[in-house]
Length: 93
Image (cartoon, rainbow, N blue to C red; front, side):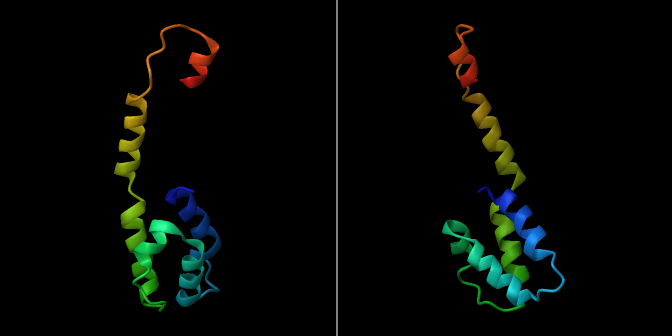
C-alpha cells in the first residue's frame, strides 16, 4: 500500500478519533506499519509526546507530492511508442 492511501485510512480510523489518546494512537500506528516506514519511527519510544513527532517524520519522508509527481512523469516518459494499432499494443499503453 502506498503511504498516501495508508495515511488516509489511518487518519480516518485512528488519528482523528477523539476517544483515543496519543499513546493509543502511537501503538496503533506502530502495529500498522512495516518495512522502511516502521524503521523510520523505530527510534521513537511510545509516548504521547512522540506520537505527533513520529507522524510528522513519516509524512515528511513518505508523503511527498514532488516525488509522486516525478515518479509519474518518469513512468509516462518510459511508455513505449506504439508502432501499430493492435489490441495488445493499445492494452500496454
